[in-house]
Image (cartoon, rainbow, N blue to C red; front, side, top):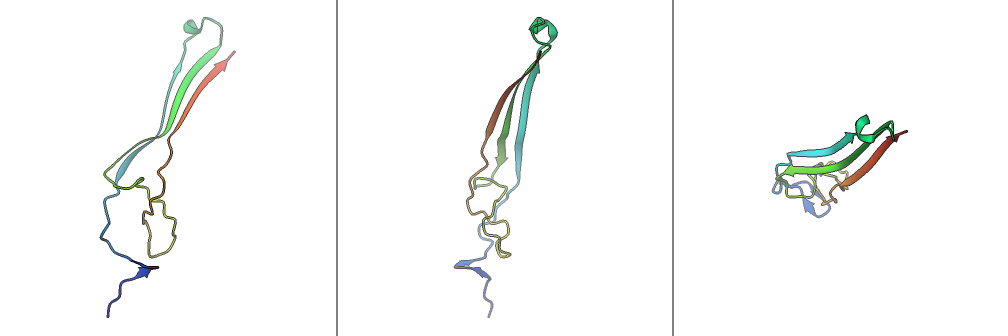
Length: 99
């Protein structure tokens, strides 16, 4: 008699398998360096910038994050999504000044 493999009280099945393909814009930095004429000899160099980490994920995956973060590391559940929190977005703003 065939009995499917189990993990605890769960049967391993392909019922909920879905396409996990995605496109992630992970880091984006925009900056501007002022010319010498614009800063009028006050600074030798002046640059402002902004960076966004984890800007966007384009996917049809129904979970939080298509890069599945498994909490259970058993051979019976590789790549199973246990609803881990999505990656956070981070904003960085800065100014580089040289006198």
